Length: 115
Length: 113
Image 1: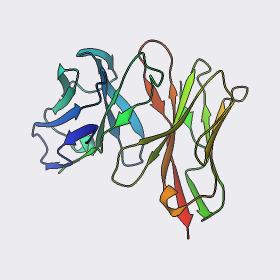
Image 2 (image 1 turned 120 degrees about the vertical axis):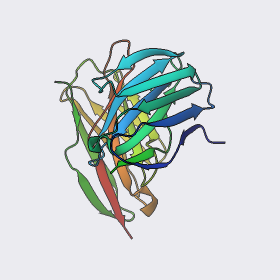
Image 3 (image 1 turned 180 degrees about the horizontal axis):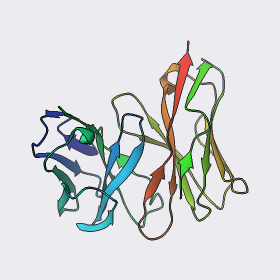
Image 4 (image 1 turned 30 degrees about the horizontal axis):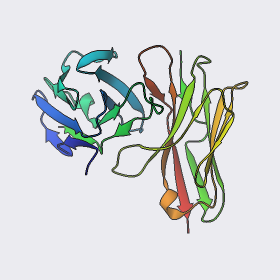
């Protein structure tokens, strides 16, 4: 009954590789997000999609490319991985227009380690 | 720039005591605030929210206070339990149509038995 599920949970890879993280939500939400959490626990938004359309795109290197095939899925592809990309990446979803419009539901995170 | 910050990065309390976690925000246009709890190895979990037209909201063992005059938000946890040990974040809606939540730095709460 996982509401927001991310795969994989852990990802260890070498510099220069390309990797993807997948996210799916079964809450019927129409908006999904990717957040990056650094080693100091600081959470920063990267992207947001509403009904498959990009609505938030923060200053993120263009090596990061989100893809939303439908409103229940938001994947994150990262090209040419660098050491500084090591972090925990969280997917989240919400339903715009509802009473708890801003209450996100988060996934359990993907810990990416670039070596 | 706009930012949400916390006064204390760590807080250690005894089991049964009340805990107060503080947060300062700088964007006077923010109209919605949320407290999240993040346990080790998990994603942030919604605790309680408050809109800018309110100054207090209570939940089960938790109370959020909002002081718009000084742009201050606090989370009070009554009768703190070991299971409350986690990192707590305040988040604000930055306004506009982007529905973007800006998170504070987080406070690590440790409850000693």
